Length: 628
Image (tube, rainbow, N blue to C red; front, side, top):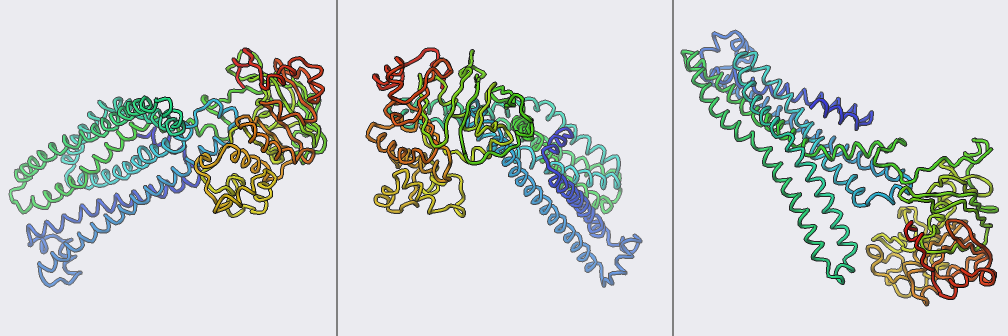
């Protein structure tokens, strides 16, 4: 338990640690008042059994005189009222302590969730290429919930009950040391024996449950995202069977752990009932007068009434914490990614060297990147994914002049998208430099560079929100600029559709992943989104490849209107979309094989002529193995 407490302390920030100390103080206060409540029954039951104690016991006599009670009956009413008042106060403080524990636990859960999500956002883009998104979601939601409900809250409740137990046992020790030691030893031994025998099983139940829950979450996500294809392929039932199998395994481990945690309760209830009978016989044997034994019997009965639930809470909390230990380990591991110290499983798939330019003053790395004034240069770039046998990009050099339209074409899987990701500052090459107006892009200035970029991917992500919110993606409703939204939509040739065909205009809900829109409409929203911030550079990563030719022409026309007003970088799937480009770079074997206008490449390059003739990219076994 002590080691667990130290691990939980490591999750706290300074403010939360101070709150935890205050919480501990409240627990101690609750324990002392609880013990006072138990002890308050003694004088009441003593006078009930033997009213003569009012005269013979100096403390009771002094209290009787001080209170100016008129009779034994009124004195008993006073003692009973006092005992009841202390008990009500004890319950009120216990309620306050329990509420404070719950509030502290869930606020800590909120803190942990936001910290883990923050750690994800700080990871390099390559991290997300390697990790399953459903697992990442589970880490900052389900795992944190398990830590809160299964470890933090139960552990704090167990500490509170342990303090109450210690205070009450100290009271019993003061009354009858031997009996207190015997009672504590019997109850403690039973719980310890049971816990030591089941703790490993409970831990295994928890790990199996966690693994099954991750799998069922992944399967449910895949079913809902791929429901259209699964229905057509007739594989929806097969997926349901896989989900049901994982769900059954999850349920089995859950109920087995819950059942095990209740084992000591019934054993202790039997032992406690027998102990009460033996205790009564013991008190009657050691006290000739039953009246003398009555207050002690009441004390021990009330002690058992308060301690048995406390012991059960402590045991239940211990087993619950054991069950959820896997989630605590996952949360601890993810939190190590904060502060730039990635954990072993958060290592980016790209082992990139620092992008330090040769013979440059290190101070230049701190230069902010302003609006593009001259050119973007990719100089001697080398990039290799960790799961690839050879570099995907090998000694690549190309230059993009300001306010020109540049297209990058080549075999499928030839690294076109990877080049775009490097320009976007999402991936870091093992060697070479990305220069913007002569300034190398590094970790210190990549954010300022990204502020000048607009990006349109092949598949546009749309949130289940309004059309305006999707264009101004990530901007709060309070900061959303309607004029900029409409201006971006006009450039993307979307405004007319919104005004004439959507009853709610820009406030129309687009549905999850834009299911209520056509492919062309989704792409236009993507273009409008990229233009909302009025970027200097617009990057189109096969933005029209999934569209039919008519829709593609319409979307391409929308893009063509901003040629020479902005720097446009296009990754092309169909060469017909890049005929108006100022420069086309043809990639081969991870480097630039040729460059020129569309007409120039048609005239001088056989591969480009074949691509133009076939109207599509030729397959390439080498690049197909590497992946885009």
